[in-house]
Image (cartoon, rainbow, N blue to C red; front, side, top):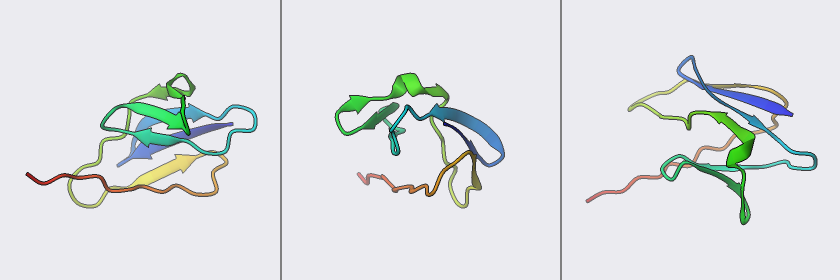
Length: 76
């Protein structure tokens, strides 16, 4: 089904899971949605999430059992 994802009260995107699909990875830097070796950008409508410095309120609507966010940063 559809899952709507919001950050800090702003709706960012809706993702539509295909039949039998139960997971997706969003790479916000590359702006790609994928699972294993298959691009899933066509299942996504809206913008990739942008997190602000500090605390962010993350909410979603839809039939989701879990959301995992992995920090990805680099230092020069």
